[in-house]
Image (tube, rainbow, N blue to C red; front, side, top):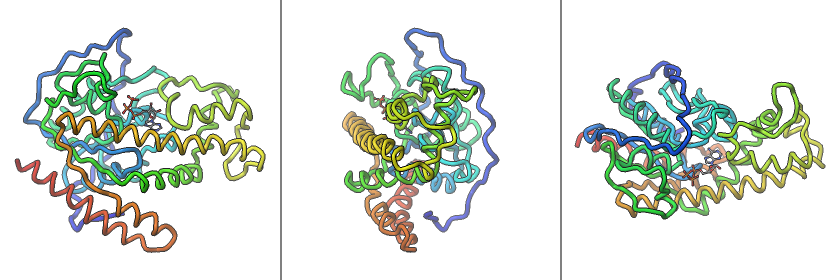
Length: 336
Ligand code: ATP
């Protein structure tokens, strides 16, 4: 893990439990535009899935007194922590994280309008504590809903309908962690294998069993679209798993049957990354001032280092090409 030679400024206790989210009334969520907070500074860390946003946010949060707000639309729900790639609590180094695992997936879909309302009030709370809010996550529709001054829930500007608004609710500094697509593609496919070795299959099997131990279609609406759920649902319909099945212990026939889902998960993750990069570029072309950090060399070194004991090289490159420049950008932004 990369480290700058700067002492940790703050190690904080875990964040207080988030006040319970109350689903909004049905019907179109027309959220009134809040008054603008032009003087209030917010740092936003953008990037495709797997590009190192969480790593960068923790590294930066040890340098600036800050709190993190998740902007990944699947990670807001509780459950499927491995499948949705939530940063594990022990890796958060005591830095408060908000809107991660805070919404019960049974309550229905947590929409961009919901995120706008709740996220803005979390940002205001963080600022009132004297901390710097870091918005971190790959869901650009959430980031847009949170920050655009004029937000219309009925128009999906990132998919091409309507004009991107570059007037923002807060004074924002955008860091975009990017890397060459072939390198990201290779990394994402390896990451899926790592996720299976860390319990993703077992997590999905439990997801499909209800409290009475019956295998059934998941009904936790919020999470139904998380990559891994639909892919396994198709496989599980043909070969229902036993509750005690483990990935390592599967017999060759079942394992071969489930490999199809793994293949699809790899493909769909790479497609997601491609779409996310397209949406980031749309925001940039629409006038958002994104500062691009190139993490290609760091990822190449990290993949080459696997099992070779040369992990320090990737950390040095990450610090020189991603963390160091980001820290400088944020420092300058705070001094402006
Ligand atoms: P859109 O609004 O078009 O869905 P977006 O940019 O708002 O796009 P993304 O975060 O790109 O949202 O998510 C799009 C889809 O990708 C999700 O509906 C889900 O299927 C999948 N996805 C996103 N994040 C995750 C995650 N952490 N884990 C699993 N699947 C995810």
